Length: 179
Length: 273
Image 1 (cartoon, each protein chain N blue to C red):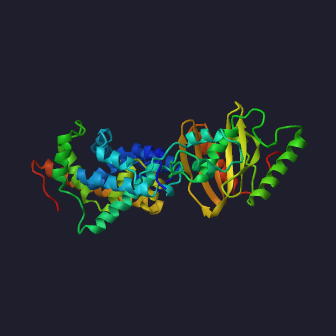
Image 2 (cartoon, rainbow over the protein chains, first blue to last red):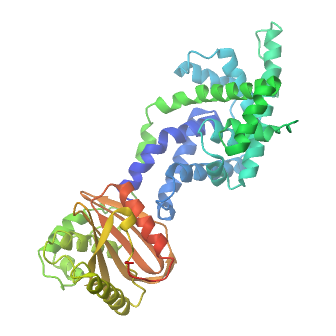
Image 3 (cartoon, rainbow over the protein chains, first blue to last red):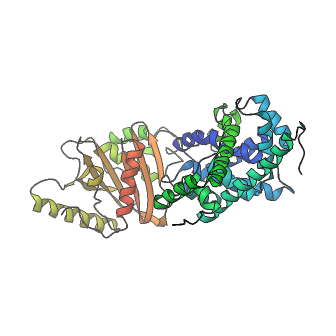
């Protein structure tokens, strides 16, 4: 038995947000779309498990989270491409013109420095704007853990950004590679 | 009165709108009185806005072809087919002919719809057949006569269907959702009896609930089907399969389906004071 047209239409509707989450998690654009494709295929394979009373986006995000976890376990190291090159890709495609390019590169660097355990809930809550309960659902962790991880992620991100802002304020235009 | 400082986790949760009531008020007051903490929270908000600005342009990008293709890819050569075409064909035949015979006498195609279980197809057909009926929409009508007669009919309907189906048949109370019970009937399922309850709203629009004994006990997720004018939510709970069919929009039908699923938990009783 396979997924029907209604379910497939519903899936099409969540693709843009899935892509945004994947992009913020994986940085490399083709790899992000690979993750989205895997999530969509798994969603289709398990469509009979999806209870229509639930939120489809939250369900598919949890599938994407698991797929990314599998990917990380398979890779020897994080599948994060050099953030500088990824940012250059983003610049070429045209991001928000109002944001200082220097800050954007620092932002992606800072984000990449967070552990996945901190980065994922931060992105789900801040960018995807899930509630803590929905985020807990996606990541299969308690709501209290979501709360503390988001809080620590924010503090860490701020710290990293403070650090790099201080270095550019010092006058040097070059970015210091921190890894 | 010295207030206790809310910790970072709480301030962070406040920023996300996760704090309610008196705690919310308390934190707002604290931030007004403590500019350093307020500045930190503002920085977190600015970082959050920067993250959104950085990644949200993705939403406006056209969806890559390969992702759309992935959604529409099917692994079987059978098309899903139109079960409403089949419903129209069934209307032409007298009730009582086994649905199976229809397809054997057909144009040599495979049975309609590898995607939808057979019994839900029958539920859709039953709706298409009986919902338009003016004079005989149901076999046992619970709206005729005075209150006493109506209650008798309800009791009779519930007991009769329960006995025939060998599963408890509750007469769900959907008045809170704007639907009154019209009555019900017995129907032939593939290998035995099934039941149809019919409900009607103030404007005469109808929904039907098809019930049948499940092949095995289960607690299955709600599924949704749509074809043309009709939509359907179906699920299995315990020993009973339920299919709610109607022309209403999905959200409306979902509210009804949830009301039914909730009532299924309680003891069987006919609606009425």
